Image (tube, rainbow, N blue to C red; front, side, top):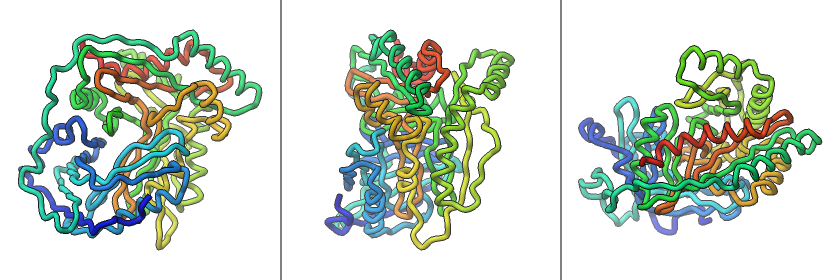
Length: 422
């Protein structure tokens, strides 16, 4: 990729007036084709393409994150805000396979709306481009067709075939080939008319307010799992692994959560995931804070075991960017398994087709190196009338295939409830 802009680019950031923040709807502003990253604390939406930064050899090449930071840093910045996410940003989703080609985009326009009511807008253009007109905060055009009202669903592979794959994975773990492997499956939804991305995003935001709702080139989701956030020297990661269903009865759900915490199988699966994140960040951080036991992360239809890991990067003139941190962590055992290379080999053998962006990093980075990347789970790829929904489960030595299938069905409900609206 080109490490510096070919022309002199200027990023101009101005704070929005309170009335502008009040009327700003990031979902409507991003529209069907823009970028959206809506976390509980911040909504960041992008339009247009000032530059597309190619990671031709994948995120695994550590020189690529350096080059992205170099490109952003070479853009002249007129930034009156000076906060994480202001100035030029690179946004996007990257493939699950760390060696697969990917790319990030520097949008030509970005709006940010924070939960405290503050917001700003950034434009990126050649120096001679001038300032944009006042209509820049208007929503994107609405889709021209009615939303679909008829749907057909098909699992890929069929349930019996997938159960056989789980059996094979369990046998591989028990034979000592690896400690854990995460297997995913797909459900294909065909609609009678094109799916409306903004409608899906709004439903996800209502159904899963504590998750990060995202949209990148047809890849949409509501992820509960933070891969990494960097703010100055502060770093946070929040791996999830271990799942139990919700019944809707508070008493029954409390018992289920207690059983999840007590389950040796679920605790082992989670500890494998958290251990590798601690190892990776421990080499980079001082004062790494790791809870002695996981917490319960409750969503609408499931609860997970989660461990919030916090650290402070070593003092350095050149702190690793959030993208470099993502490269050092991805893929975690929560979405791949461990040991990593063996798990990736078994995923390739058993799943048969590349995952694309499913379970890959999705997020943003600014020119300071600050930013956030979520794990692209609870996600779907939308292409006109068709949506490909994904879900995965961690397989260890005592995994039961039918229970693992039921867990994928629970996880798929997150997207089915937003996509399928008869």
